Length: 126
Image 1: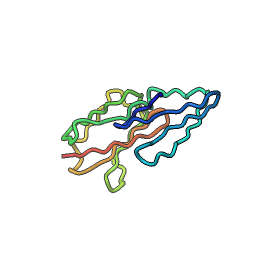
Image 2 (image 1 turned 180 degrees about the horizontal axis):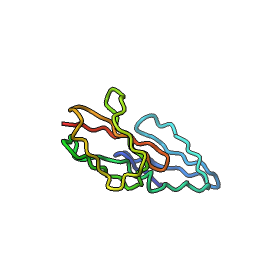
Image 3 (image 1 turned 30 degrees about the vertical axis):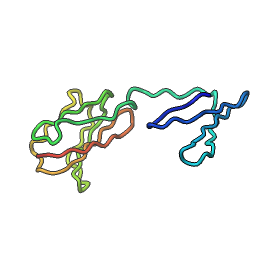
């Protein structure tokens, strides 16, 4: 019998011949099969911009905030925790860093736009 494992649990699999159905028996929870319908359709590929979310460092930060992100940054928006927009950059950010020494201490959100998608990143200013 084939099995499938995940999150520390192993389930017995029953694959029905000539059928796109796969039954996973969860003997621990209820012994009722979970039925998944499998498809031969191709799976969409994930672009490199969708693989990793942007990160900032150091966090908390004093003066210069660095952005670690594989994608191209089209725009950034800096907002306070109250939702007040502090700074907008419509041009590309090539060096992936931002001088924030002028900000008062507190929590902020950096919104990063890449490939027409926005990513929020929270950080603390000391």
